[in-house]
Image (cartoon, rainbow, N blue to C red; front, side, top):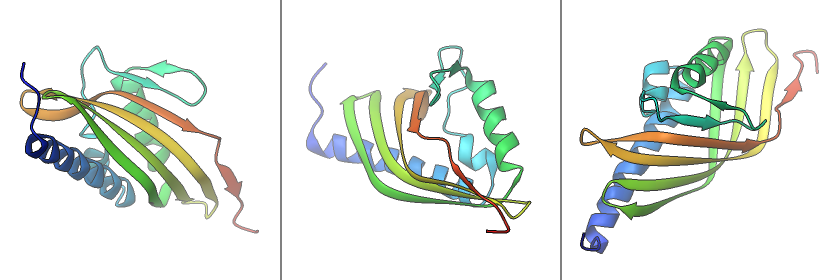
Length: 146
């Protein structure tokens, strides 16, 4: 396999960045299909949680759908996002972000700083996440009355 050219790498980075923009938009509009369509529904998928738990695709997606269904708004702020192309079919996206979830109760869950790593593989000519790892502390709950 010959090395990728700078133009090829730039194209791949752009494609991955567009997928992350779609993830953010999906979360912020509470559109579950848009938010979680990038995750590969394959047996090899692993999500590593902040507590060290490992879950499969369906468990990860269902946990997020359940949580976001309790939200009236969800805001994400990116501090840094970087793509590293490993080869023509593999890339890693590293993301530092802030998350603010406004619950239907009026309470707010706030994560001031968090990090995530996505491993993308090209599957059937589409970029899909095959591994996802979150690094964050539990959110601060800000009660409606505060």
